[in-house]
Image 1 (cartoon, one colour):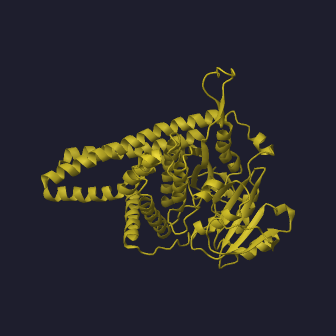
Image 2 (tube, helix red, strand yellow):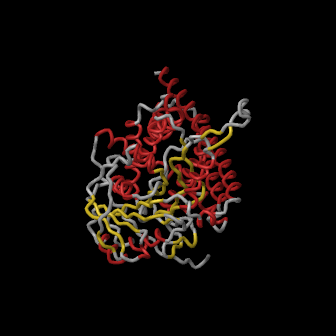
Image 3 (spheres, helix red, strand yellow):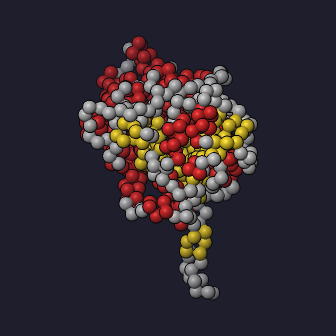
Length: 498
């Protein structure tokens, strides 16, 4: 028993120190990434790209299932994005309400013969619609058999996409007007680096030879955050405010930590673990060759990104995934515990699937950073973290019951971990403010940061519980439906004080 105690305590100590070090490293890397982004972005004139006929075409894919309440305003918002060449593909995934009929009536749609090439498997497509009104010539509506997942609908959208890049989003998200301009830029930056001079002048011809650098950006992401309590007018965020209700407010803080501090930091060393399903811009060719989305997966976004990376590595092709620190997408966070528990249980199950499906990649040096950093981190510090935390609580209780706990040491350790977590969250909020001052008053910033002091006692235990619940459902093979988000919808709110 003493041997087990020493081994367990030693493991937890090393594990905890490593995790704290990783968080500190990500904080430093993300700050460096934000500073670099601001420096480079200060010289960018997006109007030139907006006016350029050479801008790469982008297909916006937005699956829709029973979205009759908000579908018209959301589609209008997508059609008004600032970009010279894009199309909007709405995939009606077998809606049982008036979603399709409202689209037909509002945008003057008629059924058309369309060159639909099923390069990725999905449920059958029944009809395709285009508008008779030239004002809506960028809109394509696909009517298909319900595939019981966003992934299946997204695959149908990819098959119909006319352009080389596609942006996958949710039809009920609010996307900033300049999103396409900002997210295509990393692809174009890398294109400009493809040809470079290497070596010394050739002794035969006297010139430095040129070679093509084959690094290829296969995906870009941006910060996604909670729109609850924000002021919204006709699909445009007019005033950013932290969510008023405690559950969405915790999610806002969590999203800032995950995107601004986490993914921006990983982007600095080209180790981005996944691109959010709510907003991600992808290279269509690579996505198709990797097999598109897995319609049976509960982590469809991370699964496809992982397969895209393995495809590039298996074919000896250099790749990069970029993340930009500005907020380009707003979504409604689960407003109640029922919806929240379903979402987080699904995420937990999805993570278990990722670890299982791609287990051959983990710790495999052939897959370089993906196999030695990205997936091992997800295994050790994302997947195992709830398990280790739960067993740690049980172990603490056991020590207390048996009277073997060193209270002075235990309290100091708990206080250190608690303050460290508060510091990391506070840094994420401050880094976000440094990128762009979304919150107009310091009262709002401080109010959000103060949530970090109660997160370990209120919100974090819920995250651990629902993650373990997802693991359990995965182990027993319990069927778990995607469910309805039951969104309350975005309304225009005008507080008395601004």
